[in-house]
Image (cartoon, rainbow, N blue to C red; front, side, top):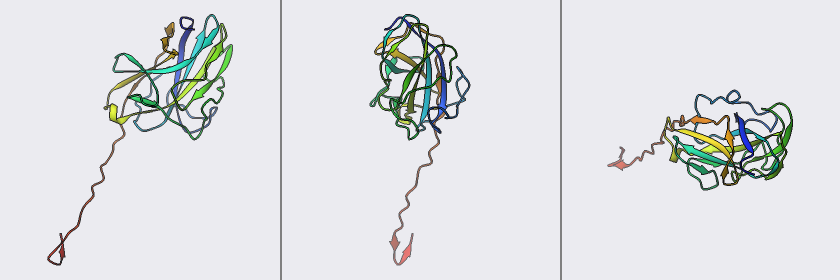
Length: 186
């Protein structure tokens, strides 16, 4: 039900614990110093609903301030990534909001949380397990993440993560060939 939901908070967490005890990578509504490609992160969002009705949360990304694109199994830049510590569809608990709460779920496979009926005046917390793709990113790129209602933007965004990429350094393995020349090795 686009037009009734607002993304009010976000928090990035490490994929090092279950739904209730994974460590946080940054404070509430704060971006970490950088995110690394090829590392699994979990991004939690708080969505406040003002009217109530059906809601189908999906994750979208923007690269360097460009257009928003749906996160999915074949998307560029960021993709859903399975976690050994939380299950797809696992119920969320209240961790980044206060007040009236509506449990939702975690996505680890397709960039879409299980649709649910939002309740007026309640905040839902949803979480996405993702990895940033080194093939599509360079050091210093900024990736913004937003929740949409299916394919429609929400009515408002009070807090949007803008994550700066700090790619993992990869040292290429150099395969050396040894060849025998006249009885010796070169």
